[in-house]
Amino acid sequence: MSGLPWAALAATSSAMHRFANPTVALRLADRLMPWSASLCAGLFVVGLYYALVASPIDYQQRDTVRIMYVHVPAAWMALGVYAMMATASAVGLVWKHPLADLSAKAAAPIGAGFTLICLVTGALWGQPTWGTWWVWDARLTSVLILFFLYLGYMALWQAYDDPGRAARAAAILALVGVVNLPVIKFSVDWWNTLHQPASVFTLQGPKIDPSMLKPLMLMAGAYLAFFVTVLIYRLKAEILARRASVLRRARAEP
Image (cartoon, rainbow, N blue to C red; front, side, top):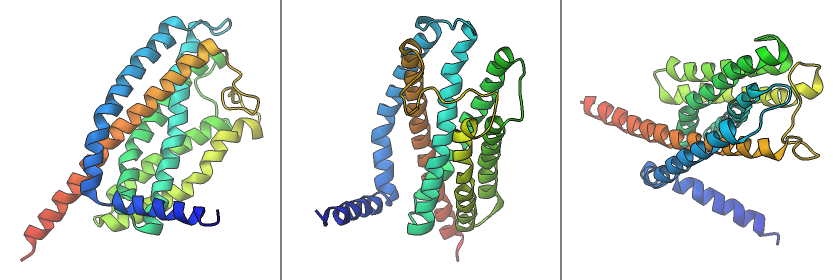
């Protein structure tokens, strides 16, 4: 039994080195993309039907509760994508994995988009629910900071001509910004805010009615499949752009 952790570590290391090859990564991306795109389209069709048609209205919020099916999965993905970026950045810094930094770079605009959707839909939902578009409470403010972290990460990639320096600077920012994730998650428990506490992932289980939980989870799956699909597309573009840059430099050398 004592050899199992080392065997698992060796297998993980072997897999990391295997997919460090851009050619292998591109081949895998080409295989995965049709499946992820089909899954994304199917989940969106079914999820939107249940969210907009089949799910019941709320006795207090009426039809405005349907914003939840767009807002909540966007909030989950905003946090999840940033956690993925931080993990990839750590892998890039520690193991120098050539595709780790490119994966984080490819994910950043998608995560920023999810965060923007979260902020906009939250304002649209907050006005009829709380009577205000925005309040500077802990949850809303920390999500806004997350949006700025995404923008700062992308700006650092553009601030350096040397891709290596850009990757290191952006990775450090991504890792520093991780401290904001637990603040977002637990802000409604640590401070008195207008935002409601967690109602899906709790120690007592989901507190939301199954008729609303089903479309919520379908939409969450659709968002995740969308992220995977766009990430694959953007990662392929980053790999090909990096290859083209290398070829241009090689031709420019005397």
